[in-house]
Length: 120
Image (cartoon, rainbow, N blue to C red; front, side, top):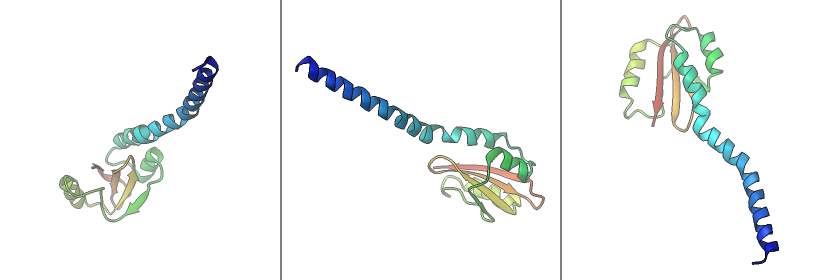
């Protein structure tokens, strides 16, 4: 292989690396670090916090429902029992990484009375 061909191959390789770097960075950020912020904010919400405080920390929920539901029932039976016994009137749901659900249960006064997180 002559030096001209070798230089062309090196140039193509560098171009591919430069084009792929931002894609790899955003893919890693999307799949590994998206939950960091929501998890940190979820942990900072205390029982008794108002609906407005929760939305200010976690943003608008992905879903609101009167039925508690995590990604799966198996291995989370205690969480379902806690939700049933909590007296929550409605729940806010935020979906994090794949198969991660963050849930806040609220009472009639729009205060947090249940925090739960489910993973598979």
